[in-house]
Image (tube, rainbow, N blue to C red):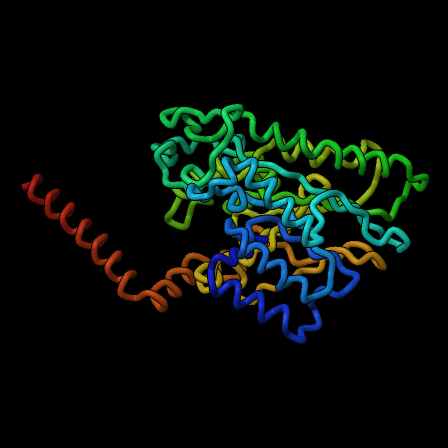
Length: 373
């Protein structure tokens, strides 16, 4: 997910990857899933699809928030709903799947893949972090400036807790998903085998639950341990992002796909956060494998050697992967490693920040000393 080919480096990475002789590349009979955020520009979206089509595999795409951005100089597209419709039309014209599909029906382990379209509604807000979310309605989140929604989705007043988030939008997309969900439910109910080898893979761009948030370090914990998990120095950004991360309503719909009593293996692929994840939670495996932005790979916030990840083989079933909860912490050296890379790549900027912080601390110390004298 999150190819962000608006960045030249990402477009070049993708072109080189798809033209390489890497034996792990998707092949002719494979289905490659992209969980949103290719580009907000239609020409770059089309160019990216063309590059991916070099692989001669099938493509499956669920748009992200960037695809909903509107060019205010565009006289044809009036709002973000129309922009998303244009994205779907482009995908259809180029042979990209955007609706439910069953892969490998004649194989031992067939797989249903279906889209879970969505948005965010503030339901993933982290509890007891109100002070980190002060001024949220004035936060320069780009969606607030680049998305235009019809009047049926009014924005929450910016002075309110979830200011500028559109009302009713998640419910609108959930209703759009209902046809795909019903199709897969009925197909599973029609299976005679109680020990079905059929798999289910739901795909969303947005996060469906709090456990998918970048800093949720223990998926079995019902509560966010802010004093332990906000150990990276940017709690304000993390807390605000949670509000625009996704919706718990998406998880409700995801969990409704496999009917009660059925035993089909269920995986969920998502995007948006640019922080890799791969973990199991209450019977579903959640996977986020983002390309992210060049800077994020440089900082090891994303795997610098990221590639296509095989999740299901219709000959053998689910393909296991290493557990990932917080990639940069587990595999990127943690806070120490992050600081060292910041110093190495942007020493002047880092030193200025450090010097400024040090100067401020010294001033406070002198002021305190002067007051005590």
